Length: 218
DNA sequence: TAGTAGCT
DNA sequence: TTGC
Image (cartoon, rainbow, N blue to C red):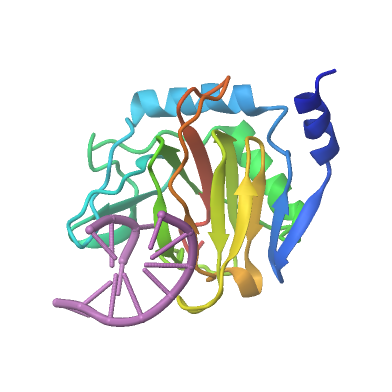
């Protein structure tokens, strides 16, 4: 067994508390990552990755797609959830049950036993792509947590407080890591630093992040 | 240049 | 203001 694999074994079952209501579950997606990536390929064949535009008129560096009943979209008019993909005019692809069940299990492990996600935002980062500091606040039901799954190239996740100016924790996220935040942490600001150049055996020059949300009130 | 402030 |  090589050292990389030993490191992975050592991460199994480990979790870290970032704040009340926020945890990193290390390595939870590792064993099923290849299968998850196949499912994501299926989604992106129906809803291609695209660079959305911010309300300020700038293109985002992250390539985005969605699955589930609702998808997150951004354009000059603002941020919102939509039942149709504005690029194709069709409904978003269904959320694969394997992914949905995994997200529900991660939420339960982190202390949110009743998670019922209806939206999954798929963010694909090339080297240099980033997400600047923001809150996830477009969902009407803030009692549901956010479940974030990291695949492929590593990234540095910044996890802040409830005010933009609050200090941020720097969290290194690698292939297979899962972050869950909700409850009192639900509206904490967060960001992703520019992804560094690299190569991953399963994703090549990409980081793929899945965020599962409950985007409708019911 | 990494970290921060301020922007409409 | 999920960017510059």
